[in-house]
Length: 125
Image 1 (tube, rainbow, N blue to C red):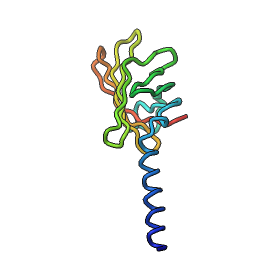
Image 2: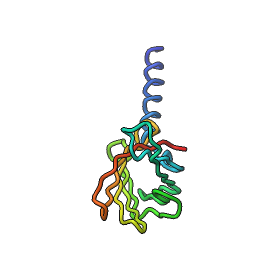
Image 3: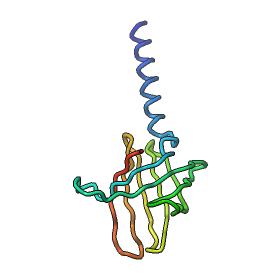
């Protein structure tokens, strides 16, 4: 009987952990994007603020204050949170995608008009 109770409790905690990984509420907040994660000596950072996640859509700002993200969407079909968005300012248009793992966002941003792809890692502020 003790073994059954222990197994039930263990399965409950595993279930809670999987649900926590896929809860989209973890995305809401301000994220600091390290735009050159391979170089630990620089300070090449950008910001992303996600203000809302509803019906698989993201709202907020990307790169710097006032640059609204557009067409932000998420997908959780594989128990991992994936996101994609568009943004743009006077320097051009940007397409970004990311996934959430262990409290961080791992992503890329394509600078469409500037012909480069940035790889970034974000931590929540």
